Image (tube, rainbow, N blue to C red; front, top):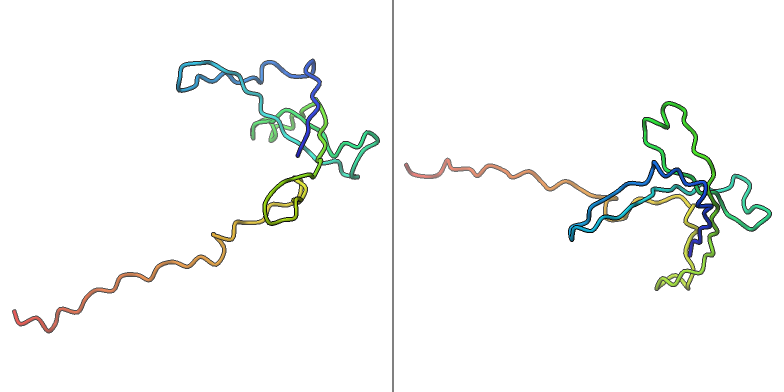
Length: 118
């Protein structure tokens, strides 16, 4: 389980995205990103920081996002088959096995019609 602690006074309200759902209701979303601490857990047992998500253009232009909170990776997952634990969410993602060793289907071969009597 990942827990977040956000200082709501630091949220940039201009980054809230208003979305109309299929049923016609309007809701607001805020995209956030978690960055792990370079030196592991901090003095408050936090695993990393939470920032506003930036667009590719903002990242390319050098815009930085302020820290608006922290997160803790509690690591008490209940996923069958792994003994109740899972890798930390900051671990590198491995490619899905379904896409490894994938082969292309053999191309269809043209049938030989030379022995047709007409």
